[in-house]
Image 1 (cartoon, helix red, strand yellow):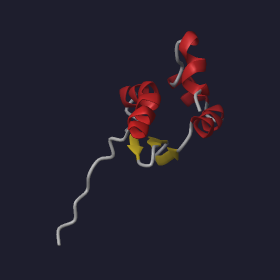
Image 2 (spheres, helix red, strand yellow):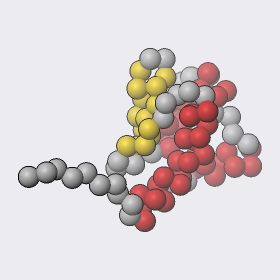
Image 3 (cartoon, one colour):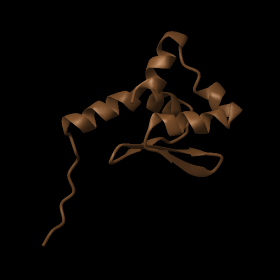
Image 4 (cartoon, one colour):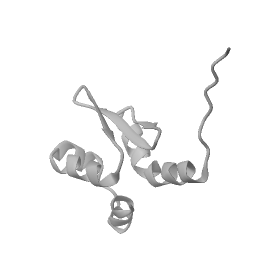
Amino acid sequence: MPIRISADFSAETLQTRREWNDIFKILRGNNFQPRILYPAKLSFRHDGEIKAFQDKQKLREFIITSPALQETLKLPSETKKQRFTKP
């Protein structure tokens, strides 16, 4: 019996992908090799380790501990609050 793997394109999944999109682009642009895992989880390489986050609050807490990431992930001030405060 063949095993089939299909992508989850539910409305919830698509919305989650949109919420992470800006951060994902910044990480990709800085060669962090980001990945979106499902259920929605963002992962990327940092200092040789893979970091994974299911929500933006955990990502925010991690960023606070790394000045290099704080600089890399600087976002325009008018959208910064929106990107990191969405549930």
